[in-house]
Length: 484
Image 1 (tube, rainbow, N blue to C red):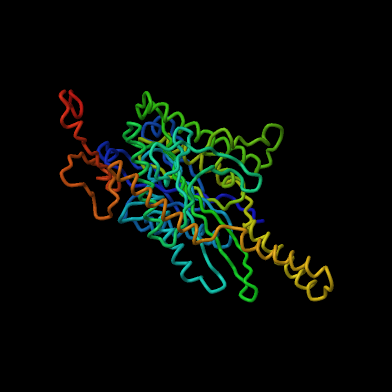
Image 2 (tube, rainbow, N blue to C red):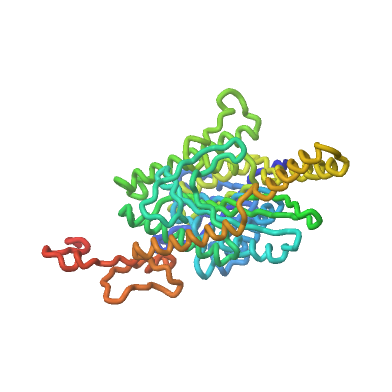
């Protein structure tokens, strides 16, 4: 068992258009592993307090590309993502989660853009490059992925092609820990397979938001990669496995309702987000206190189950995982309170100690025991005489068959993935979603509407077909609002 503290990185983004128009002051400075938060102008004059200084494992200054210490997407991955990948190949579970206020750069850090890919696509690309270099006749690798969102405390499978799908239940197994019952886990053979699934999953998030009449999906997203390493004894054909899970989490933004002007459904949505993030804060505080020796009475209880998010992240926070938190912040004086809150959050998280172990697949242990049993039976068979010979032969055949049948084959998993991909494409086409890499595909002689989005990754992904009944209705049809 390896005991390691959660590693914490902080990244400051460039000024956005709104902050530039406001002419707001930069209040964030970074020096090596220190982040310094200056007081904003009003507080500077009134309170004359010293700047607040925080120390972290990594401080990424991404404010101005012309600065010598500018941290690019590649720099962030090299410092954070490569260690996670190395841990996975060693057989450890690993996790990266991004936390910060809305618009602070979480999704950009985790997913990035087409031109500047983030941690997740870079990690998946490097994963298959490493597999190509490490694979031998004795050592094989299998990769499976899942993609889910937690929206209003409900879990949705983003790789499930079925329309009107139900939310999934979270359960807990005494060996596996918390898991999502019924979540798709699809076999992939290349980075392109993963990229396609991520794209389809993101489209599913867009569809979900549209079906709920929302302008944007305000959810936590969890992309998981399961790496299975199979080491085979060429002499006997018996194999053992190590299985590691990489959980890559893009949390919804922390925010204040007063500042965002949220009302109605948006307010409810925000309260659920804040509930899960508040619970995450409580979990982090409890675990940090336990690390500092403050363990008495109720302090022993950690409220993982108070939110779906913390329940699913249970192993990654104080459990069997090597974990990195990336806290994203704005440089603007206008966001002083949110930035200070994020830095305090991160400062507590760095005290949490996880207890990671190399994950040998349960099947591998069973196979090892069966292998020993087979060798014992073969030895007995050599020296057995009379009626016991038949019994030993039967037992030997039974054990050998069990070794072959203990798990589903990789080929069967690939067939299942292909079937689900075909179902997803058919379901999305029925809903009018473009699934063509070259752009939108629209049937001839059809009337339709197309969505436009400021985010290039979401632009022109939805096609709304107008049916004949809609077009030739007797009554007047109005599209949009009657008032400007």
